[in-house]
Image (cartoon, rainbow, N blue to C red):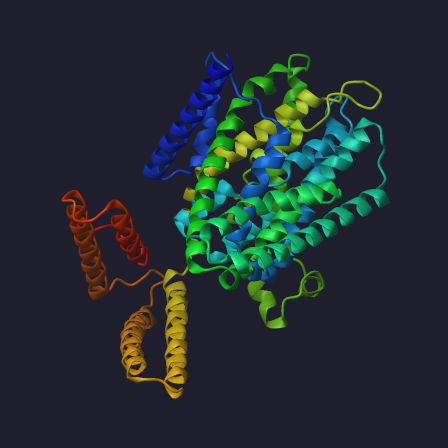
Length: 551
């Protein structure tokens, strides 16, 4: 019986992976985010006869959320988030709090029998956007880097705010009462403690990374364990585990270029991409499968009560975000200075224009954190009575997640394209090539220092050969820079010579790979030798920019 159970679980997991891969393939072909399509597939499965997978909030919060947040933090820019800290804090702290309060009082005033505490609980659950779908679309349509930073930074920090507010609301609803001073103390302690734990874990990872940097496997093992260590340590001392994970990820990601080797970074990045792909796929499938459990408890509510509760929740989520963005962007300059720390010359450039406000308003898709949070609501209060309107709160949260994830997720790309918000690709390429040229010039200067030291003829030949290679590379970068500087377009200019060079290099790599395979098949090269040489070609091919192969 146990063997059958294990086989059933394995079959279910394999089927889920197959669905995730197929949906991802379809999404790439039709230009839609997989995060918006997978919940629809999950709903379809949930309506069919057969078992469904119930969402366990403890598993989501402990095993799924930490690695997803940590991976996102690793790929974020700590410096970019600091430059936009005022807007990020405005969205991830103040707006989350406003969402919770407005929905809470809306429930108390307009939903029959609802309490402020229950309303704030659902408001806190639906307040934090899950940026996965918005970021996937934003990168595909080429949104400016600043907007991507704001979407990503908000998604990293808002979960801690929402979960803290939710815990306070649940305490008030179950009988512990509500106190503004104690709530503020709880929030500040949880936030400060989470930041401290994250910094401590990041420091420990840095100490471990130095002696292990030569072994990519051990570096990967430490990297995979880090988010769980940060989360569990923070939760043990009753501070924000979510914030600890995010802070650890931001610091480790910022320090990674100095603390790990190139081989370790390449392998770690590949591992985390796979983790993201599978976890996000399972999570979005899981969202759709919760429909039967959510709908089952609505029988005792009047239709009018359900409609009013859903209208308040969805309406506040969709309308408060653009209103808040417009309000904060229209504040007087003196108040902007008080709220942030930008230099005087940067304040005006930090403001969002109308098109950016609209795109940022429509990027607030909700996801699994909202469902996981609302499912943590207890079944009863301290007195033994049922938790007030728990089934209604679950349904409202599910509708918000579905409406934003599918509705906003499917329409985000057309809106971004219609507004014409695109990154200046030519300027970004210019910046990268300037950095490449500067790094080569630094290498040439280092060779001059080596040459000035005492050395033999062999070193002289090696130095001269290396210098020749670096000068050829510098000339290539300078030529690319000249082309970029002459271009007036924001799109990347096409250089026939550059494209031809890429084509020739790919043809050469493919020819080498085929010849190595012929040697292996003829018995002239063992498989371990083939893998070593193939890995060298793979690294060389990885250096080439993504371009469709010429046919």
